[in-house]
Amino acid sequence: SIINISSIYGLIGASATAAYQASKGAVRLLTKSTAVDYAPFKIRVNSVHPGIIRTNMTKDLLGDADVAKQVLSATLIGRPAEPVEVSYAVLFLASDESSYMTGSEVVVDGGYTTV
Image 1 (cartoon, rainbow, N blue to C red):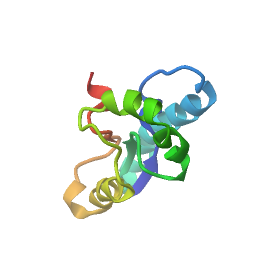
Image 2 (image 1 turned 60 degrees about the horizontal axis):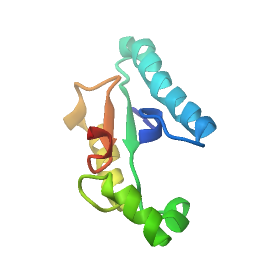
Image 3 (image 1 turned 45 degrees about the vertical axis):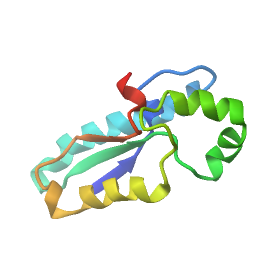
Image 4 (image 1 turned 30 degrees about the vertical axis):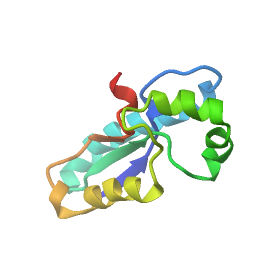
Protein backbone atom coordinates (compact mmCIF):
# COMPACT_ATOMS: atom_id res chain seq x y z
CA SER A 1 0.00 0.00 0.00
CA ILE A 2 1.17 3.50 -0.85
CA ILE A 3 -0.06 6.32 1.38
CA ASN A 4 0.53 9.90 0.30
CA ILE A 5 0.23 12.83 2.68
CA SER A 6 -1.47 15.90 1.26
CA SER A 7 -3.39 18.56 3.20
CA ILE A 8 -6.80 20.14 3.41
CA TYR A 9 -5.19 22.87 1.33
CA GLY A 10 -5.11 20.36 -1.51
CA LEU A 11 -8.92 20.37 -1.29
CA ILE A 12 -9.86 24.00 -0.61
CA GLY A 13 -8.67 27.48 -1.51
CA ALA A 14 -7.08 30.03 0.81
CA SER A 15 -5.22 33.29 0.34
CA ALA A 16 -1.45 33.68 0.18
CA THR A 17 -0.71 29.95 -0.04
CA ALA A 18 -0.93 29.25 -3.79
CA ALA A 19 2.37 27.35 -4.12
CA TYR A 20 1.64 25.20 -1.06
CA GLN A 21 -1.88 24.48 -2.29
CA ALA A 22 -0.67 23.63 -5.78
CA SER A 23 1.79 21.10 -4.37
CA LYS A 24 -0.83 19.50 -2.13
CA GLY A 25 -3.38 19.42 -4.96
CA ALA A 26 -0.75 17.69 -7.10
CA VAL A 27 -0.31 15.02 -4.41
CA ARG A 28 -4.07 14.48 -4.43
CA LEU A 29 -4.21 13.86 -8.19
CA LEU A 30 -0.95 11.90 -8.22
CA THR A 31 -2.63 9.56 -5.74
CA LYS A 32 -5.62 9.03 -8.01
CA SER A 33 -3.49 8.52 -11.13
CA THR A 34 -1.15 6.04 -9.48
CA ALA A 35 -4.12 4.19 -7.98
CA VAL A 36 -5.28 3.51 -11.54
CA ASP A 37 -1.79 2.54 -12.71
CA TYR A 38 -0.98 0.25 -9.77
CA ALA A 39 -4.36 -1.47 -9.33
CA PRO A 40 -3.45 -4.28 -11.78
CA PHE A 41 -0.51 -5.07 -9.48
CA LYS A 42 -2.77 -5.19 -6.39
CA ILE A 43 -1.07 -2.11 -4.94
CA ARG A 44 -3.45 0.32 -3.27
CA VAL A 45 -2.72 4.05 -3.33
CA ASN A 46 -4.56 6.46 -1.02
CA SER A 47 -4.01 9.89 0.47
CA VAL A 48 -4.45 11.52 3.85
CA HIS A 49 -5.45 15.18 4.07
CA PRO A 50 -4.73 16.56 7.54
CA GLY A 51 -6.13 19.83 8.79
CA ILE A 52 -4.57 21.96 11.50
CA ILE A 53 -2.17 19.77 13.49
CA ARG A 54 -0.20 20.77 16.55
CA THR A 55 3.33 20.67 15.04
CA ASN A 56 6.36 22.92 14.69
CA MET A 57 4.86 24.16 11.40
CA THR A 58 1.75 25.50 13.20
CA LYS A 59 3.46 26.57 16.42
CA ASP A 60 3.47 30.29 15.58
CA LEU A 61 -0.06 30.19 14.17
CA LEU A 62 -1.50 28.47 17.23
CA GLY A 63 0.64 30.65 19.53
CA ASP A 64 -1.15 33.80 18.36
CA ALA A 65 -4.41 33.77 20.36
CA ASP A 66 -6.40 35.81 17.82
CA VAL A 67 -5.27 33.77 14.82
CA ALA A 68 -5.73 30.48 16.67
CA LYS A 69 -9.26 31.49 17.67
CA GLN A 70 -10.13 32.35 14.07
CA VAL A 71 -8.67 29.14 12.61
CA LEU A 72 -10.03 26.83 15.30
CA SER A 73 -13.50 28.40 15.15
CA ALA A 74 -13.70 27.04 11.59
CA THR A 75 -12.87 23.55 12.88
CA LEU A 76 -16.03 21.80 14.06
CA ILE A 77 -14.11 19.88 16.73
CA GLY A 78 -12.71 23.22 17.96
CA ARG A 79 -9.09 22.20 18.46
CA PRO A 80 -6.04 21.23 16.43
CA ALA A 81 -5.27 17.57 15.82
CA GLU A 82 -2.48 15.85 17.64
CA PRO A 83 0.01 14.17 15.26
CA VAL A 84 -0.96 10.71 16.52
CA GLU A 85 -4.55 11.28 15.33
CA VAL A 86 -3.32 11.58 11.75
CA SER A 87 -1.08 8.56 12.31
CA TYR A 88 -4.17 6.47 13.06
CA ALA A 89 -5.57 7.25 9.60
CA VAL A 90 -2.26 6.26 8.01
CA LEU A 91 -2.15 3.06 10.05
CA PHE A 92 -5.68 2.18 8.91
CA LEU A 93 -4.76 2.71 5.26
CA ALA A 94 -1.66 0.54 5.69
CA SER A 95 -3.70 -2.27 7.24
CA ASP A 96 -5.73 -5.06 5.69
CA GLU A 97 -8.86 -3.40 7.09
CA SER A 98 -8.67 -0.93 4.18
CA SER A 99 -8.14 -3.62 1.54
CA TYR A 100 -11.03 -2.33 -0.61
CA MET A 101 -9.79 1.27 -0.67
CA THR A 102 -7.71 2.72 -3.47
CA GLY A 103 -7.67 6.21 -4.92
CA SER A 104 -9.40 7.34 -1.74
CA GLU A 105 -8.89 10.50 0.27
CA VAL A 106 -9.05 10.36 4.06
CA VAL A 107 -9.64 13.84 5.46
CA VAL A 108 -8.54 14.24 9.09
CA ASP A 109 -9.50 17.84 9.77
CA GLY A 110 -11.91 18.01 12.69
CA GLY A 111 -14.66 19.02 10.26
CA TYR A 112 -12.82 22.05 8.83
CA THR A 113 -13.73 21.27 5.20
CA THR A 114 -17.32 20.36 6.08
CA VAL A 115 -18.61 23.94 6.27
